[in-house]
Image (tube, rainbow, N blue to C red; front, top):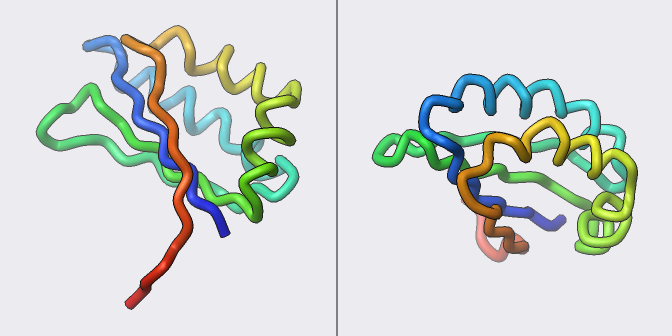
Length: 98
């Protein structure tokens, strides 16, 4: 299982609209090949900063299948207007759990 961690800084004052757009995009992630859902977290110290934690069966399910799909284009159309800067994305794999 792969976790995509995407960090978004959104334009101040658009936080609620961004959150609504991410909620609207939920089906795009759930129907994606290998998509296992996501969580959106908002920073307490920096309220215009978010982290999206998306679960994928494989790295390629995100980087090839989803990013190459019409659903990715729809995702960016929903949320891209709120970005203050391009998102930072990395992928992780779980090595220890409790």
